[in-house]
Image 1 (cartoon, rainbow over the protein chains, first blue to last red):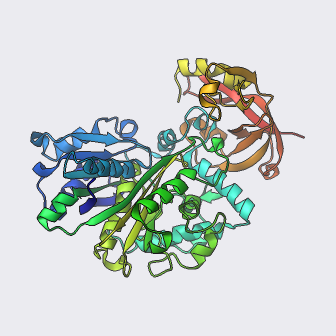
Image 2: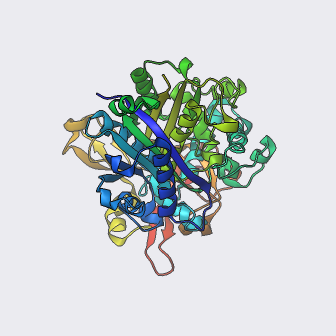
Image 3: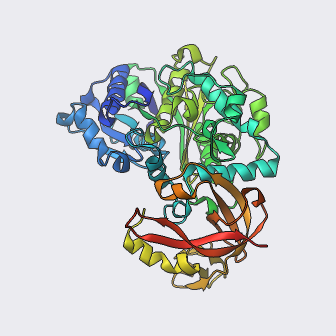
Length: 387
Length: 134
């Protein structure tokens, strides 16, 4: 089976892009990726598009075909498909593209992730985003994605005697890193006090514990080992790619603060890569809510259950022991559902290629990315490296 | 947030908390399941209806301030995960109480209440909520 390499990346800025349409931002990211990879669109063997809520928000389905056509490449007749696993859609699209290349069916694939979240207003969006949780047995009762995260947070804080300031550090770190990322939704730094004093959303979580609704698009070009050799391209290798899925509803899980699929996907990806956690230079985690950041660090294996606090105290900044979310994370780079999973890998690609500018981490050799679906129904973990 | 047929077919579970029991392992499921995740094929055709008493305790709770349109009039409300005495955990609101009286571990029992409405002239959804057990 062929190894898979990332050979190009592109992004449209994340944020509230009222003057731009879903197809515009998706095409911008895709064409930037094609340009950076030095390929032609006629070289594409397949296109995989991660998108979560296009049908509900924009009332538009079959986005893969729409984007491809809007990019002006309908006449190339490239197969394209949309991949949907709610908030992990982008990471799942990336994984499917990897599997496609490994199968030998084609040598080059485009992965896109795009979401237009600011088309509709606040309360209506809470209803629509609640389609990532169990509509009939969670959302029906008044549960929202934020409320489920809050249920995890309350129990976590109670069982491990953890205070809100520990959760807030995840958001503070995200904002600090995003201040150095020109594609980020929020580029302001925040203090712990600001994070702790924000408007309540679902107690104990407040506005600064919750990732924003962002528009955004990210794209990557993947190539087979054969292509990379023949063209003398120095890509970033996909060393591990794993997905795991467990119970859908939060109330069906044995623990309210353990996402078993994250643990399993992390173990699988590390095994494929032949690496241990000590080898990982940086991690992009799915912190749609601050508590999920803590849970991810623990379930990925970087800290024991209930002990993420110690890991955070040892430094998660760009020069820390384990740099977390150099991109600014979901909280500050932004959270366009279907794009985020691709965006995390774009960040890992820039870091590994030493192209991350002001937020470049020193000597990045291996990077891990983690994307979670909903309240933890599924997780996708990737390990990327330079050789 | 729900069409008529969906509401109609869910009435037994929403109105009187009808769950399912796996006759192979005797585990009780609510919301109802068609297949027991423990017994798998041994449970097929052996998942029988069982009524849940509605008694349980709070495993975790939150006070929800930002809500979908259907719940705006109720905010802020308490949403909790309840461990039912029959075994399963479910999500539901805790009502008729002071917010500060809600705590992890408190005993609750189910009550039949209006949950939401589909707009001014739409369907009214009823179902279970919980009150603190005095």
